[in-house]
Image (cartoon, rainbow, N blue to C red; front, side, top):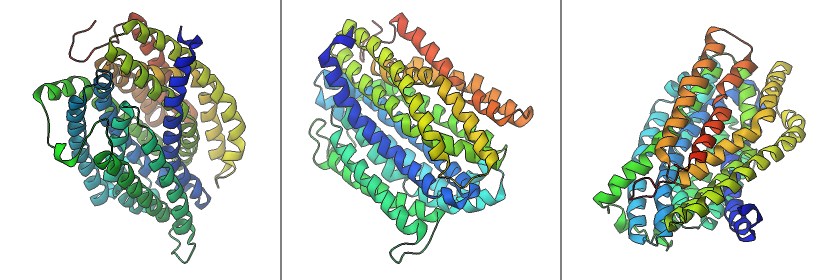
Length: 451
């Protein structure tokens, strides 16, 4: 077992800490937007939450783009095959730009239409549409930075993305303060000010991270002249291994967006409660993301080297560690709940709904953490992308989303019951992915058939 191996811990911690910090900063940008507009009431909270949920859907697409390319890059890096790594980067960046432009056009040209998908509350749509339009202007910046960061992570370079995200986070807080509250002679823009701060922060992050990848990064050696490069074999492998990841994460992001649609059509109080709870849980979920990111790198490189028994041993250790992390998060949430809720100007009814949602998270966080690490880390690092496509899609689309929609929109059950049903996929996925892991069929070597 790797749990007694100091080198395993050292490698995991070195990979995990930068990923945790980067994800904390990335999520923190949206978290600070929600927190700083919390004093303007439930309409502003809900409007920002719906706009940010659509943006989160886009981020899931970006995660699929980046992670799909990384599945291949992990193994090519283990094989020291720089040329193939460069081909993968070219394909991933071209797809990223195309998808980003489509998202930008929709949010900038039709923000009211997008807001109406999430809620039928006229005031929330009116307040949120200008915010949505400005957030749409950040999409290309965010997409290029995200894909570049994922590609560099496959070669062990996390420092640049971390520095870029850290500076972006500081810029976001500062310009939020300036434009939300009208400081230093700037106009008081309230909700719109949060979007302005985010736009400035994302633009800087893109220039810093994507600029470095294009001009200075050496592991890929990718430069502007390589943008149109490619090879038919690499394209076929990209379709086989990366497209399922892209589809999987896109469908997962879409399902989360539709979860918000269900909640948004129940009422403003549950929408605000969901936004508040999601912001807090997402901040602490960075530990899951860090462990998943570390396990994907370690196991992907081990599989690329052909040491399959070592990969299985590493996987066993990551499962145990993920459960321990899930248990450790619960008391932190318990300590933070009361002071965190007090920062928002909300009704007692909204506060009660939010507390009920938190109880669900307290009970099932260990299983949810294990599900995330196995699916987004171990199985993905092992190249088992087609199984993940089935697991990610079927549980949410055929179990949790239909039950939640029926509960909230047809049966009109208690909002907390609806919330629990909408989140039911996470513990179920943990069990399904654990069973898949135990079969050993998750190790899929690129360029070869199942071993």
